[in-house]
Image (cartoon, rainbow, N blue to C red; front, side):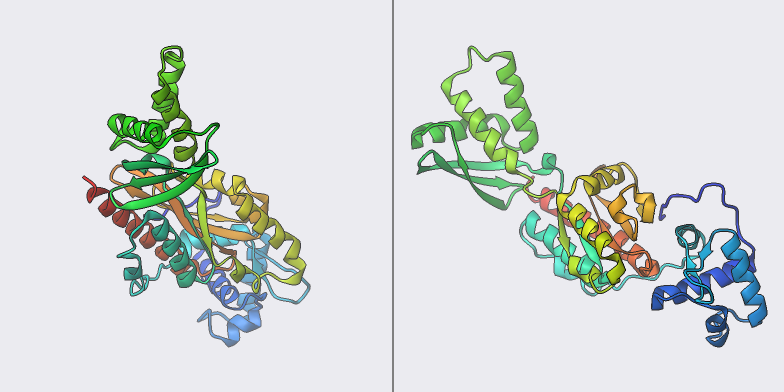
Length: 353
């Protein structure tokens, strides 16, 4: 069941009002231009109503706050309130085209899978695809090696979730021999193999806090290395694809808003707050304009859904686009992609057991 924020205090419109509102919004989504009664009448989008009746209904919808007129005699556009009513009450979802989804199967690493999923969302919707990197507690330590590179640099070879290999170069406070590094790796594997990286890091920190004076050199080195190596498990909090697709949509007058959006997408704090909120809610959530609580998204809509391992949400994905996006196709695509990504991640996890 798709979920969305309900429009506070709004009752149902009459059938005639809903018919006209639905036709106008569908026309606006297609053209991006204000829509007049003449257009609706000529295109026979509202069957059975005369042009005069359509004009009256449009005026009433504007009075109720569902439509606005950007200029005199320029036609009408839906307000955020009108779009919310449309999404909640009038939208008929299309069945998503799943023919491209097999491209996600056979991807070896979580990082590649997240990037491919973001690319696919952008490709299917032609807007910005966004996928949160799975939470660190889902990266299970399977194997670990530390190789000295000289000048206090160490190559960290991590194997997580069975088959995903991650290589990182870290710099320690002082030089350590290959034997010392091997002992530190052995210590970490002995105590934390099969556990998630964040849990291992926290357990080491807690142990040091309780028993700092009796901590031996090997444990100190293990803490120092893990603090740097395990602290990089999420080098980016979400992955984007198709950001340039908004350039052609946003008009020149909206360039300051577009710059704000791109800055927010890359600075991440505001977007991550929204994604974290969606981690707590099942189903698809649709935020239109100011509903997102993010000034940079006020001219956009964002459709999000969390993806899950059994009994646990681990991330959120979705699409960022203009308010006139094709909700009827974008919403089912986001829903289906979230389910597929969760299934593929679950298969990867099961293969490690």
